[in-house]
Image (cartoon, rainbow, N blue to C red; front, side, top):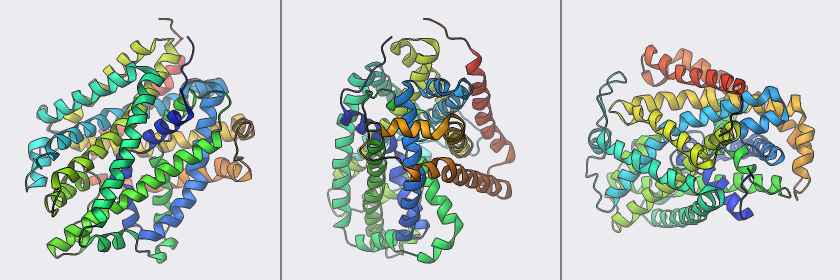
Length: 488
């Protein structure tokens, strides 16, 4: 069957930016910046973007556009021995969909409550008690948290509708609505935040440079980790999306636009987050370090409390904030599912409709454990391991397989054919040396840290179970290339 294509270049760029801009841009970047030297963090971050993020984006765009296939198919066409690397990326993406969809479900719940600030004054109690109905340990699942289950089902219904309509009719159209809306919401949130009393104090905490930290290797590891994870690399997404490009596409320029747009969104959102936290700290008469939090706690506990304290337009600001989370999360989830569905279509010569049903059906079943009352624990554990031993490993394998074995020069020649900006010597050094070295260092450091300090204080059996999910995904990735192509 003929491969689908993007209707416009703008549609592709918006979809790729939509994939890259996700929950991490809202609750991870600004906190990581604050925790690692403030404004000083931006120096290693931009270096990481130019020497790792953008070069790997160019490599993945080049693979997809040259070989016109999903991640497994594109890598197989480069060399039959590489197909399993593509499946490893697909499996990592699949695992992420199972819990990412649950977080989207939480976001829908909060969006529904934002109109009336329905989380009340006890925001922690609302999240962990009323919404998650959190049990005492990972081993006590306790049945479904009913609100989370409803949010999860609503999420998958939305994804199913978009994916069924295909690249142009579904993903591209959704991206042309979601991305402009997201940037409008971002501007509204930043304007609202910076006009609050104490906002400048919060922004100063966010950007105040501590240049002494530039000598700390942990700062550089954090910068490279942020640049890598934020761009949706290693998840089979960008290879798949670029496979829908027409032949004469400016690959290098597209990679720069998508990467810098993702960076710009993260940086700008920091003003909204820390401006609001600055107001909260000022209102409470405490230092910002006493109210700041990261991850789930920031988005679903601290910021709802801050929204309660606003001097006016509380509901409007709350709706804008949680709508931005929903839009960013949905656009990212759509892209991950597309990477999975496209791999199924290519491998088994399956129609889009059937492949989408299979991909979403399997993902929905896998996501049910995270909708239980013990689901938050397993979400935290699995997310930790898949980011380290899924995405990082895929990134290393891709650059070794393509940059060294297949030949980086062959990909470089392809991406330069129709590009205004040339991938030159800087790309060779980055793809062949910087990326694998940095990712190996990050992987080693995370492993050593995990050995010395068990992640999150969880018991060993729970951590082994979470790690086992990643191992199972890797085993499946190794087995899938052995299956013969089946005709529907």
